[in-house]
Length: 279
Image (tube, rainbow, N blue to C red; front, side):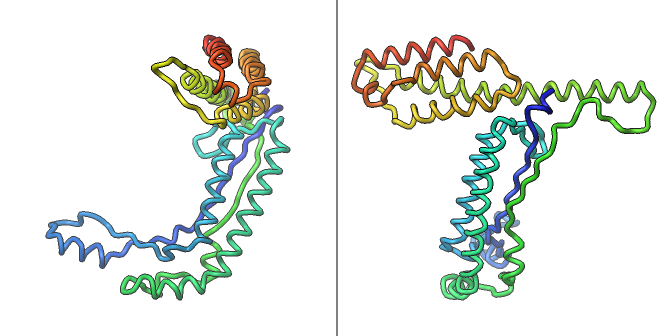
């Protein structure tokens, strides 16, 4: 059962955008342009140029990208599958992101009154003090929330219905469960396939077609090998074999050597293409 080797995790990080639609300006533009109906809306940045607000958004964006990379798709409502092999490392990094997020929010809140005063000058006639919430209201617009929960058991229908109906519900969920697990594993396979395809394409080299690549191509592939060892929740032997083959293909390979030696480049490409043939 996947419930013994993985759990679900939801991560939510609402961030105040500090944007506001200005109805008066939108109306003025429509009148100036002679439109017969509302043709568009003018949204203004209440805190244009606020670096500390940008810092919060950068942390949230980085945390979200990392979260998606270290989990697998599961539920349409945002819950993602977290393999237990990756739990402790995931939780440690999650705590780090939470600390960064809270520190960034604290720094922004401290500066907020000054930012509002500055906006009165920078926005000119667009400034409206009523559009700026007080400090407590602004703080409530930021949050770093996460929830871990078990993967529901297909047979756990505690409802008062006849056995036939309960059996139908169990069968329906069992199929849903199977589909979701397949989607999760397809995601892992797709990450590997995309990486291999990109490497094969960039390593292709002829006198007429000298393609360049960055060192990060090899670093990212190596990182993926480590991650896939944790994301293989169904213990798919083919995925593990492909992962190991890529790990071996990259072993001892230096990007600068691949770049300088046609022979080494062709050897690495051949190894990559051999793994791709599994697909």
